[in-house]
Amino acid sequence: MEWETVIGLEIHAQLSTKSKIFSGSSTAYGAAPNVQANLVDLGYPGVLPVLNREAVRMAVKFGLAIDAKIARHSVFARKNYFYPDLPKGYQISQYELPIVADGSLEIVLDDGTRKRIGITRAHLEEDAGKSIHEGLPGVTGIDLNRAGTPLIEIVSEPDMRSAKEAVAYMKKVHTLVRYLEICDGNMQEGSFRCDANVSVRPKGSDRFGTRTEIKNLNSFRFVEKAINYEVARQIDILESGGKVVQETRLYDPDRGETRSMRTKEEANDYRYFPDPDLLPLVLDDAFIDEVRASLPELPDQKAARFSEQYGLSAYDAGVLTASRELADYYEEVVRRVPGEPKLAANWVMVELAAALNRDGVEITESRVSAGRLAGLLNRIVDNTISGKIAKEVFEAMWTSGRDADTIIEEKGLRQITDTAAIEKAIDEVLAANPKQLAEYRAGKDKLFGFFVGQVMKATKGKANPAQLNELLKKKLQG
Amino acid sequence: MSLTREQIESIAHLARLELNVTEIPVYQESLSRILDFVGELERADTSGIEPMSHPLPGLSQRLRPDVVTEEDRRELYQANAPRVEAGLYIVPKVIE
Image (cartoon, rainbow over all chains, first blue to last red; front, side, top):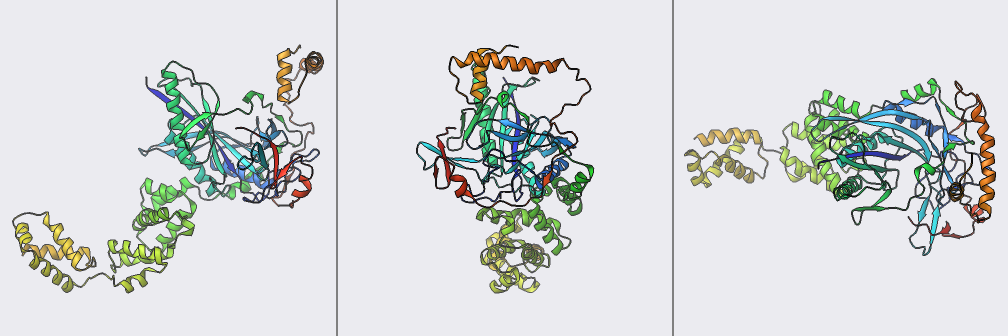
């Protein structure tokens, strides 16, 4: 039987506020345990949560960016469960009336087509603390610094049909929250993570199969692997006549498999109810308009502008706008190398990206600044060096931290554009290879490349390629 | 409305309350009476009335500026904890 995969994601994005959602504790990452956990975060009796305005503003910003409805009236609810990482015995979340509802994003599939992914809702809630097991035999240590950190939980429709689509969607949300500057997107630190709801059904069926939920996936690679494993597991069960059990599962990256997890509570036992400590959140048009005015150019808008303004393919525009920092870098190069947006795109996407990737550095820490890269490209444009030599110069710039002109001078890489010098080199190569010359003249056209290679070798790659081609053709004709 | 024994056991579990055998029928009876009492509300005609999430009509949530106002008082707070180690609150082992 042919099966169809159905995936929905719940993404948790930590909002980059300075203080917690309901208290004045710091949210800075990496502090000593529990130094950022005050009476509200610790769940002491008699304390009153007061909502952080900035967290509300960030949630609204996200809602506007996904073209969603912003609730003028939303309500905080208590989600009850007993777990020591949440000392109150409940998590303050939103249930029936979330702040953001009914939005969508577009992802680009492998074949270049675009697909709309619905976003059911995005609600504000508080994060829980951390449980620590290592080095504590027989007990669990609790660090509540993270308890009360603001989150938005972004709940998609079950619109994705493969692990690849799920990853494309998650990347899109990741790019968006960073553009909006509402989340740092740091997945290692847990600022951006997701739960995947996965089910399979016979292809063509319009009913959903029983789903499982894979918790706490904190890398794009894990999302893809966990979903693929889970899909295969469910198909195996169904094809051998079994039934998928609705449950929460955990992905084990070391073993590359998902396994059943002890459930906190069944979903219908969370006993949500409106939190009596918090009044309804009411937003007026002035608040929403103010947030709207603060929206930056969004990734899709930027990509469309890049395509139009710089004549880039949709793919290239998508890659160059994957982060705001990369897009800014590219545009600075373009400004400094007028009329060469495609050359700039190739260099940023190929040479620069490879170097960043190889050394594991972010674009903001690139060892070759946009200004320096532009300096190099200008030497290609004005024929001082060839594109091939430029790669060598780029490597030297990357390792030495010096500019292109200094390296070109020092290494004597300036291109040979003097016709007489190139002709001399050609004559020497032809004289040294009489056999190949005769063969070429007898019709073996393929040998043209051989001669180009020999002349380049003789000039240490510095002969201007266009001139060389032209002069060589003439000489070969005799 | 009458609650079953199983319902009482489930409610007690969710609230992490330990009930002994003699207590169960007591709660069965008294909680059922409370539900009956509150159940009288169902007889009121609420058509056209918007559900209320808070008993203070006309008031809405105050927002605070995003400013860190709390300082580290871990030592003081942890003085109340039964067990602390290396700054962590220590609890019985939680297995995921």
